[in-house]
Length: 332
Ligand SMILES: Nc1ncnc2c1ncn2[C@@H]1O[C@H](COP(=O)(O)OP(=O)(O)OP(=O)(O)O)[C@@H](O)[C@H]1O
Ligand SMILES: [Mg+2]
Image 1 (spheres, rainbow, N blue to C red):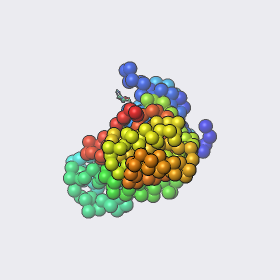
Image 2 (cartoon, rainbow, N blue to C red):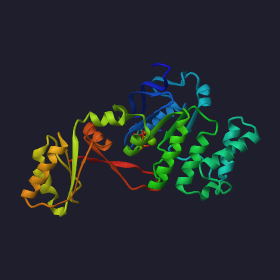
Image 3 (cartoon, rainbow, N blue to C red):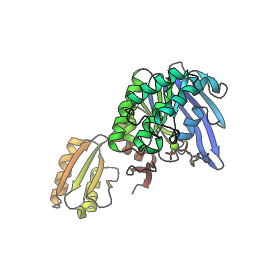
Image 4 (cartoon, rainbow, N blue to C red):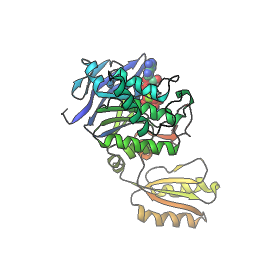
C-alpha cells in the first residue's frame, strides 16, 4: 500500500486457543484521517489495535505504521504512536498531574518540559481543578480524559483510541468527540474503535466494520448506507397493542420483514421510494383504524447497515460504569 496510508494491516491472523480473534483482517488508514473500526463485543477490535501498537504479535500477516514494519521495528513504532487502551491505564494512586509528568519522563522529557506539557494538557482537557487530586477520586469521564491526555503527551503523529467513549454519558461523550476532533485537526492519523454507530458516523472519514475477526464491510458512512438503496419509514402507533397488526399490514410494501420493538408501538420498514410509500402507509393503517402517533422517513442508519450485513441487530445498552457496550439480538 502507498505512502498515503499511515496505518496498514494486511491479512492479519491471530488466534487464542480455539478462538479466531482475527481471521485475515486487512485495513488501511489514510494519513491525517480517522479510520473507524466498528464492531460488536468480541469482534477483534482490541486485538487488532494491540497488534498495531506493538503490544501483541500476530500469528501471521503484515503490519506497518508510518511506513515502519511493526514486527521488526517495535521501538521505532513506539516513538511515533500514542495509545489510549480500552481500560484506563493511568495510576490510581497518583494525581492527574503526576500521571502526566510520569509519562513525559518515560518519553525522556526533562523534568521541566514534562511539567510544562502536563500543565498544557490539564488545561486542554479541563482537568486543572482536579489536577492535584488522586485519580482514585476521578469520575469515569475524567479518567477517560486523563487517559487520552496521557496518550498524546509525546505529540504522537499516529493515535490509537480503543473505545474512547464507552461508559460515558451523552454529555461527556459529545465533549470527548470535540476533543478528538481537535486532536485530528492538526494532522494526526487516528484509528478509533467503537461500538457506537453514531460515533463512527460522527468522527470517522472511513469505517471498517468487523465481526468475528473478519472485515464484513467498509466505506464512508454514506457509502455503507447507500449500499442499502432503501429508505426507512419509522412509525409509532398510538396504541402499542396494534404494533404487530401494523407490521403485518406494512409487510406488503417491502421485500424485507418490518422490524418491531417488541410491542412498544414502533415499526420500521425498508421501502424503495420513501415519499410515495408514506401515502400508502397512511392509507393501509387508516383503513384498519390504526392511529399513527408518529411517522418519519429516514435514510438507513449504520445499525440498519449492520443488520442487513449480519442479520444481527446492534442493541445499545445504557452506559454502565462497567463499560459494557451493546449486546446482540437476533433479528426476528
Ligand atoms: N488474551 C486473550 N486470551 C484469550 N482470548 C482472547 C484474548 N484476547 C482476546 N480474546 C478473544 O478474542 C476475541 C476478540 O477479542 P477482542 O478483545 O479483540 O474483541 P473486541 O472487538 O475488542 O471486543 P469488545 O468490544 O468487547 O472490547 C474474543 O472472543 C476474545 O474473547
Ligand atoms: Mg475491545
